[in-house]
Amino acid sequence: MKQKLTIVKVGGNVINNPVALESFLTDFAKVEGHKILVHGGGKRATQLAADLGIEATMINGRRVTDATTLEIVTMVYAGLLNKNITATLQKFNCNALGLSGADGNSIQAHKRIVKDIDYGFAGDVDGINATNISTFIEGGMTPVFCAITHDGKGQLLNTNADTIASTIAVGMSENYEVSLIYTFEKNGVLTSIDDDNSVITDINSEKYTQLKTDGIIADGMLPKMENCFDALQKGVSKVIIGNPTVILNKEQLFTTLTL
Image 1 (spheres, rainbow, N blue to C red):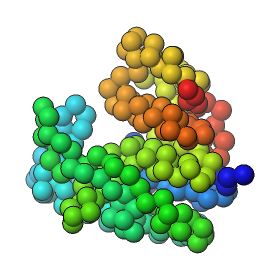
Image 2: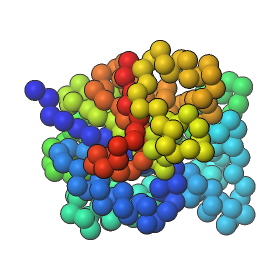
Image 3: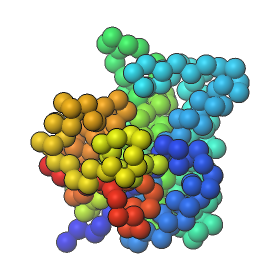
Image 4: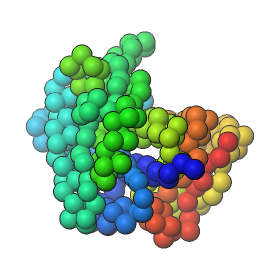
C-alpha cells in the first residue's frame, strides 16, 4: 500500500494577508503524514514592482516576465515569501525546507515558446525530480516550493504555481497516494463570484465542460481547473478546491473534482 502524501497550493489573497496566512500555516503544520506546500505570491511581486516604479505587464491574466521582473519575482517568491513561510512553519514545529525548482534540481522547465505572445522568462514545466523530493520527505522534511523553476542551463524561470502543484502531484503519484488541494480565499468553485455560499460541491469532466460552455467557469479559474483534471487523469487520487480551512476538514463547503 502506498503512503499518503498531501500537496497543498496556497495562493490568492491568503498570501497577501498576514493574519490569514499565519492561520493557514498553523493548520498546515497540523496536517498529518507526508506533505508538500506550494505557494504563489503574484500580488506581492506586483506591489514591490510598483514601489520600485516598475509597472507589471499582464496579458490574458498572465504576467509578462522581462529580465527586471524576473529579478523581482525571484526576490519575492524564492526569498521574502518562501523564507517567511518556512520560518513560520518551523515556529509551529513543522520541519519545513524552502525550495525553488533549481534547488536539488527539483523542477525542470523551459522558457515558454513564443507563439502569438512573448511572455519573456515565463517557464513551462517539463518534469520533477521525484527521487530527490522523496528523499526530503522521507527524511522528515516538508518541502515548501515557490513559483520559480529553472531550465538546467543556469536560467531561472517564473512559473505558474498551480501548474507546479499539479506537476509535483502527478510526479509523486507513482510512489504515493496523492491528494492535491488548492486553497484560496473562496469556498470553492462558485456559481456566483459574489456569493461565497454558491459552491459547486462536485464537478466531473462532463459537468466541467457544461460549466465552461455556460460561462460559469471562466478567466483565471480555467487554467486552475485544467491543471486539476490533468492531475486526475495522470494518477492523482483526489483533487479539492476550497478555502484554507479545508485542509483540516474544518469547512463543509468545498469543491471535489472527479473524472
